[in-house]
Length: 177
Figure 1 (cartoon, rainbow, N blue to C red):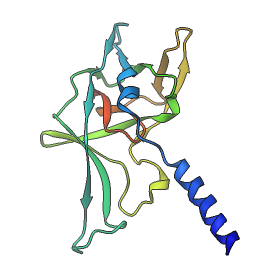
Figure 2 (cartoon, one colour):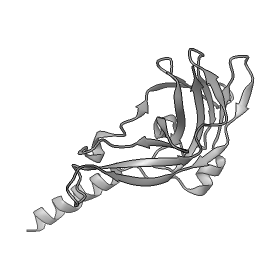
Figure 3 (tube, rainbow, N blue to C red):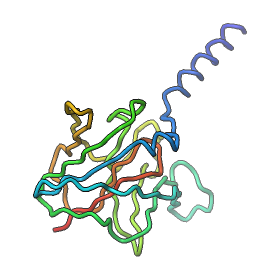
């Protein structure tokens, strides 16, 4: 009995420590993100906030893990900062010491009506599978301590936001055709 309780305690501790912890307001306040324009100008990206929501599909009136998806909603049709499709996207991030680039996600959003939306999970996906609309990027630190974040592939037209893990704070930009 004692061994099984110890195992439950240990596994519960390990599982809970692996879930990403939301960033504190102080950590988010210390973080700054910039978009490098094709002409070399570096422009600050204003932090936006989303609402977390759930979408239900199908005719069954009961929401389950198999017919419900987690999503984020941002107000506004487009981000204020824009680049052209084919341009190299370079994001510069000043991160507090407690945040590393592995805690950041570059999410792709779509426009629906007067808002931008992204799904964090597919219908029926387990949360351990990671977020669905994440765009891979490379990160390297310069001598001044800033992080250069570059998507591994050219970004197609759309709306994108750099997001500190499990946060509803976003640094958004758009790619136009």
